[in-house]
Length: 113
Image (cartoon, rainbow, N blue to C red; front, side, top):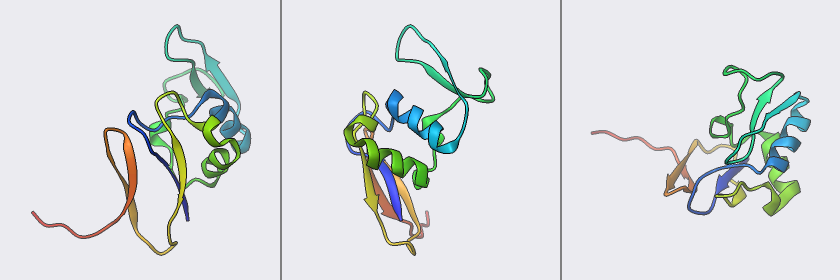
């Protein structure tokens, strides 16, 4: 299984070009709302709170997301990110951990406290 993670301080984020390609692969209608700072907001079909595209909610193993990062390489990363595709065994239960925005994939395990 392939998973997208961020490998630099800052946090996970897609470039505008990557968002456009992701919407193209999903066959979604992309609507951009220009903003004065930080680049545009992206929406599916129309501008509303219910349709805003939130990168942090993305499924990191989404094959379309993986394809975007593999196709665009460094151009897929947002301004404070460095995206990388990591391959893990299909039978592993996993989660993404992070420190300061730098992420890694960890295998799930049991905890008691």
